[in-house]
Image (cartoon, rainbow, N blue to C red; front, side, top):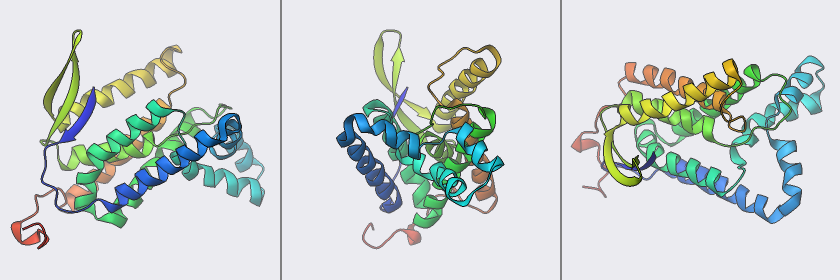
Length: 239
């Protein structure tokens, strides 16, 4: 399934989301220009669990500081056009509504927090892994978690494979995200329990970021977020 857009009224400009997309695309353009040298950048700035634990067990300021920094820098690296395009699509569809209700700074912090949480779950589960993990999927999974808690009934236009035909359908957000989460959980289980599933996808980072998003969304819900803006709340330029 591919989300195309959610059915909503645009209340504000999602400047934080635009900034994140611009940064991600800029880094990817830089990666493309490096050609064969891009592997060195991924090794240096991706999250490698084995290197992370070595830095923790034998702490020295340069190595430990670098390993801590890679938890953030890895979010802005991508492995190819499909990886980049899929992440930007999900961020664009679900991020705008979340940012409109949280505000620019809160949204940015929530996004980074989800990405850090996803990376840490991956590091704990795959402690001996020597392959760098890159991508914004853990952070974006956190945005999905917040979205589904705050706006479970909102409808998402989805490109859905019906047998051999692709068709557009409108699904409640809770249904779309539930199917997405089930896919992540199934692949994560097969990889851990039976050694099956796709090894080159960081399923546990997706799950970690998503759970963080659910918890953060629940906290926001208790504080009254997720309510539809009143007419008086709409900026004058929109009325």
